[in-house]
Length: 156
Image (cartoon, rainbow, N blue to C red; front, side):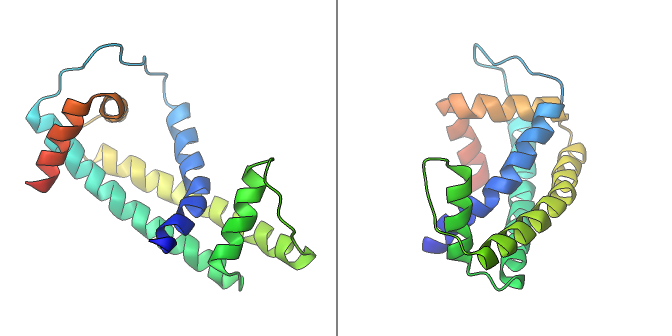
């Protein structure tokens, strides 16, 4: 869907903040081998993941509202944002667009801590520690069997 692709750029600001939140937590060793994950723990992860998606959807909506509040077309904001994030990409930007862009980015950055805290709270409310959640998330990136187990839990 075209709109989904437009969100990806908007979410970059949000994701960068989330990544910095994760970077501020103690360094986790990269899993060299498969980690043991019980079905109960994977179910807990799935529940947290679903709640995170809800927070993420709300964040997307608030970001779109922030862009539209400045009378910016979402697609044009994304074009400018992508050009700013990629030094190889160029975009002609008017002075007015530059001002609007800066206002929107400032607004998005001001929203970021609230959504980061909500994501942290979702994890804290679960039986998983922040470290274990991160460990499971990293393991899921590399372990297809674990991905399939998670998918089965989320569909069942």
